[in-house]
Image (cartoon, rainbow, N blue to C red):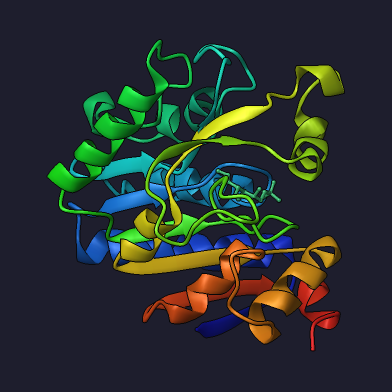
Amino acid sequence: MKMITAKDYSNMSEKAAAYLLDKIKQAPDLTLGLATGGTPIETYKCLVQDHKKNNTTYQHITTFNLDEYIGVKAEDPNSYYHYMKEHLFDHVDIPKQQINIPNGMASDLEQECKEYEQKIADRGGIDLQLLGLGSNGHIGFNEPGTAFDSTTHVIELTQATREANARFFDKMEEVPKQAITMGIANIMKSREILLIVSGEKKSKALDRLLNGEIDPSFPASILKKHPNVTIIADEAVLKHTR
Ligand code: F6R
């Protein structure tokens, strides 16, 4: 795993955006795996600023988001679909039909997972997967204990993850209990992975990723087996890692 250090959250975001833009320019038909959550917000902001300033095009980019809450409508401000529109898709020139996000309102969730798998396969897999890091080591919503060979599936969110995400909701009761997530096997099959980590509260998790054992109790640990992972981490998170 290659480590790029950044001064702070803004600098990490600038570096992550520059990294993504470089790949997009090299391969304008890239298949990008995307993450939501707090960490990538400013990375997306930098991509939007670049699009406005330099006209970098997303006309031939295809995206697959890692996950979506179950039972939250697309138009709900808390859906990941809404998040992606707000932070990226509404501000760049990506055609709607090239955007893929699991449908957490599907009546048959198993079928939805199968179809999502098929769409990823039809596209030839993911070229570059952007990841954030859960404090409990989750990647996507693959919570501790998820099998390393898992594909797209329905997952019960842990109390810790629901509490971490409660900041986006009015009340704790509104935080969904389930999500659809790409599996660990999907993430590991992507040709390249960019993991972004910021802030002291992620120190323990980053430390365990860098120095701990490869074990399903800490899903991110499997990334050590991927041949092409780049981590961009800021000084606040690195200060407390060994
Ligand atoms: C989001 C996702 C999650 C987040 C993780 C970190 O699509 O898949 O794995 O990356 O929960 O979230 P933040 O960035 O909010 O700390």
